Image (cartoon, rainbow, N blue to C red; front, side, top):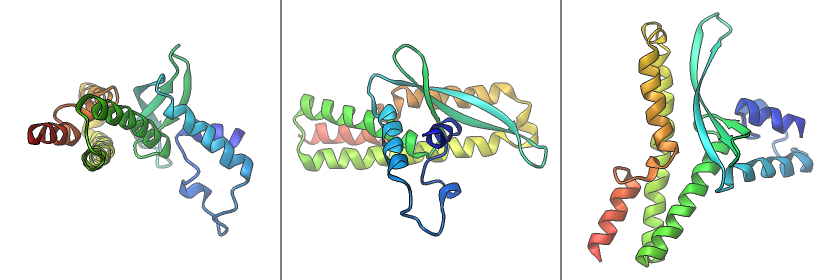
Length: 185
């Protein structure tokens, strides 16, 4: 359990290369159960996410910035931490997507085929979001950009907006596919 908590804290998942060994299926049942419990934190619809900057110095002595996502409960307590593309953040977005799909199905009486199209579009939005975060980190870790705090804050603000509801908003693929489906009716 301590290993999983530490992994969630630093943003690693059990699928991280750090956990890879010759016997891939040898994860103890206790760790599998702990991993599922940790992912359930990210799936709780009452929890929300905070986007923050993390600065560290790598082995070569170079300062680097990363974007870190902190899952918080309704009282603001920190539960877990993840990075873009992590299984934990994926679970968070899946929960938000399931809420959106249920809402769309109820409001617009969508068929399963239409819901599948929306889910595909949303998964593409999630992939684009992860790439955008990684690209922002790469661009903002250039020597000239490291001292430009305002640029990083702008990127961080945009990323935070996506996490807090805009990821599946009107300008997303999900939003455009939904609009197309509703016009086609």
